[in-house]
Each structure stands twice: as structure tokens, then as C-alpha cells.
Length: 154
Image (cartoon, rainbow, N blue to C red; front, top):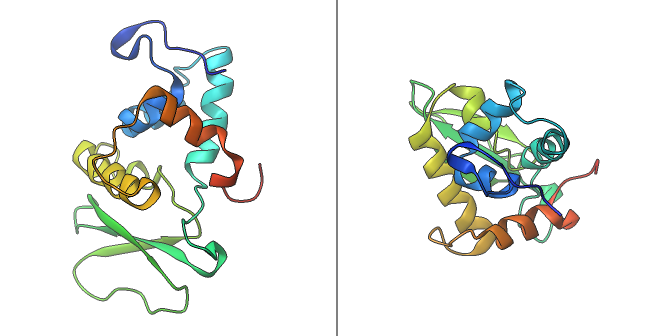
């Protein structure tokens, strides 16, 4: 059972729902230790899971995520590529990881709300089939409760 935020603009929302609604805020709040008590434990668990989302392919270990950023380190998009594929050549900055990492946007630029909107849209398209998928409290919680959605180490 996920705890609900008691105050502020996210009052009545669970931590998984906040993570999908505003990942930038979520990672900022984790860094600043805003979450207390049971919420802190849940946020720590979600922070790990959000960095280790399994690539939605039949053989996820044979793929990696290539993230694209503008020269100003603003997030653009990501795609799945085979690890042997040469890195992108061009004006975009790229990074790769073995899992979908929701913290990558904040890691590149401390405040990129537009980039996070693009990231979540791309993620919803890859994980749920449509970028316009509405993430209800129930669907956010179900996603983060399913251990099969995450890489090893849980």
C-alpha cells in the first residue's frame, strides 16, 4: 500500500503517481530529503526502480537505451539500440544505459520540465503503447509494484 502525500500541490497523491506526474520534482525531493518517514522509504525504493526500468523487448539484455540531448543538455528523446551499434554522430549529445533511467534528464540538466514531459511521453509510448496513456494512481502503482518491470537487484 502506497502512502499519500499530505500537503502541498501533490496532497492526496501517492509517490508513484508523483513520479509519473512530475519526475523532476520527485528526484529533487529525494535529493533534498523532502520525503519523511514511510514516504522516505517508499521514495528510496521508487528512486532505485525508476533508474532500472527494464527495456520492453523480448530480450532486454541485448539492448540499451540511447538518450539524446541538445547541446544545452536539454532532453530530446530516447531509443533502444543494440549495444554494438556505433554511437550517434551529430550535434546531439548522447548517453547510453542498460535500463530506462528516469533520472537521466535531471542528471543532465537540473531543471528541464519540458524535457521530462518529452521523456514521460516517450516512456509511455514504449511501455504502455501510446504516449497519451492516462496514468491513473492505480496504473502508476501497478507499474511500480510489478517486479518484472525492473532490472536485477530488487
